Image 1 (cartoon, rainbow, N blue to C red):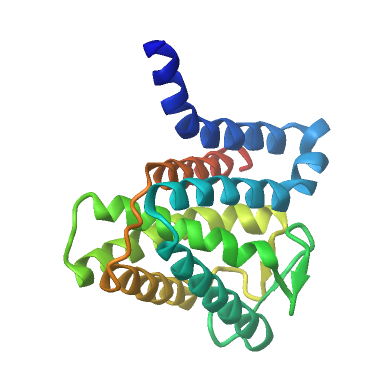
Image 2 (cartoon, one colour):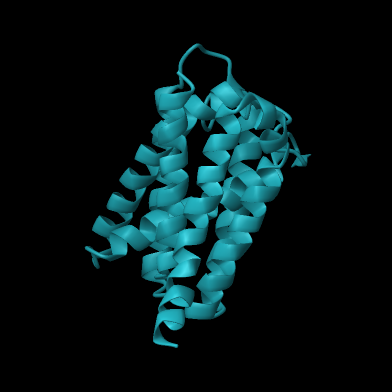
Amino acid sequence: MERETIINKYTKYIIPYIIFLVGVLGHITEETYSLITAITPFTLFAMGMFVLYHILKENGRPVLYWIIATYIVTFALEAIGVHTGLVFGEYTYGDILDPSFLGVPLIIGFNWVFVILGAACIAQHYLSRPLLFALITALITVVFDSFLEPVAIRLGYWTWETTYVPLHNYAAWFAISFAAAYALKRIRISFYTPVAIHYFIAQGLFFISLNVLLN
């Protein structure tokens, strides 16, 4: 019984690694590439809901309001960015992550919420002061984005008008994640969830692996 309890306890942490490992293998195997790219947005949505379930279970409903607000803000900034180039630079989304609204895949803001939250949970381990906490969260998020960008471009998630990722793309994500993390800390919502950390790490390893294997 005790062994079964331990297995059940850690299964929720292992699941994200299994899912993203399948994703890595699917992307580097010619026979499964088309299928794995087709189900990408649905996989991200399912994993996001998996994390959300555990967040609400462990922290209660108040954090949901932060999640909704962060999703709306990040999606709105993406929509502005796509149509003006003012926020992140000149870029356009492909159809891999559809469905889309206003030129932005609906899954984008949803995934960024859990990226920021995962980074925040990591920073929470070491920092309690809001400004320093937000700073470290933002830095972790930008590092994540630096691994994501080359893979996202290679897989057709989006395309930059330039031949490189504009520096102010990273500056924008630093500012956005800093503001979101600072708000999270200042309103004193309980948000620490180990599952969010493992999801963040598993997704980060996914992009690091594909950076190596697709080159």
